[in-house]
Length: 255
Image 1 (spheres, rainbow, N blue to C red):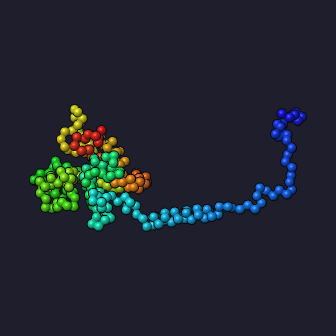
Image 2: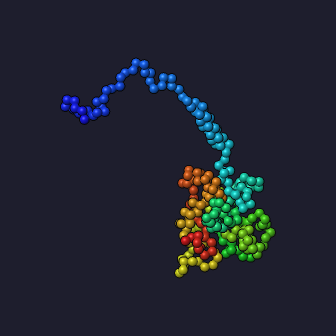
Image 3: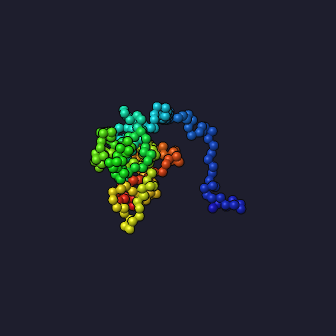
């Protein structure tokens, strides 16, 4: 330390100051921007993306992105003959819980319908020779099945072949997919916790609700999931909570 009276000054601070140079004109006398070209390119890039966004908002339709696809690859509500059938119905929505569903699609028959079912009907349980005529008009089948001419025995066979739905669930469309209310189909508790027979049931409706709601927007593809997730972010409060069908003995799907 260097002593200066009663204070101490470090050796660095005690050095002689830089002398004034009258000819010094600053770091760079003629300064200018050297990236004008890239600035123009960047502005054009932003303008291009702005046009793409504007074109998408004015010409695009989110319904086309979210339009569900039936088992024949047709878009519900858009393709020829399906203009009035905007909703997709799954014959056995339990199969949509497969891990590969977002990639390969839900492995069950899917058909476009005008309106989602408003009543729960288990055809295998209620269908008989006497009730067939009253239930005929409510059945949902693929295009190659003539509902008006089929017999009750044919109807049972078509249900086994998944050409006709074995059950209908009171449903509400969630992103154009018919998601049913399964609260009335809860599996009854037994000694071993498994329901006997081949009836459809739900072991844990609450957990089933959460699981299906998370998967409902990804039933067709990851692209549909991304688009649907964006819409769900803004519309989630208006959506109806969904449930999952658990088939047969309610085994692995409703644990």
